[in-house]
Amino acid sequence: MLTEPEEKTAEFVGMFRACFLAEPTPALWALRELKDADHLVGPVITHNFDVLAARAGLDECFMRRYDQAVPDVEWVDGAKALLVVGLHADRRRVQARARERGMKVVYLDPEGFWRDGAFLPYPLEGPQDGDLVCRATAAEALPALVNFLKQQTG
Picture 1 (cartoon, one colour):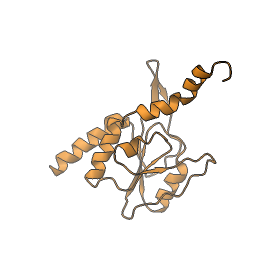
Picture 2 (cartoon, helix red, strand yellow):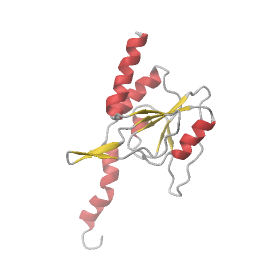
Picture 3 (cartoon, helix red, strand yellow):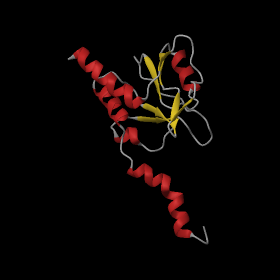
């Protein structure tokens, strides 16, 4: 830092700069459409600090803290399911709390990711009997779900 302050400063703030410049993804806009159509209730439970869900007009509940405690989620009365999206971190505590409330847990996760043209498997860590698993990316599945629901109600 002392010998190359300009380069090091840019390096240190790069991740935060990327967060400020990022835009909500099509998957987040699809979640917003699901919320606007009353198919989604409650906040997006996230460990991301980019605030992209909020920029898409969604409430956020941050799941991770520096002390690694998972705060209680304020569940919305009438919620029927917990949708767990994406390359998964350990969300088992939140999932367990949803199951305790009698909610269905639905995974939206391709169970892997692409790197250098190769698909690397990354199996889900905590599905239980009775959970639903959709092996697709949020970018694929959420807009398709929005379109499907529009066709059903339109």
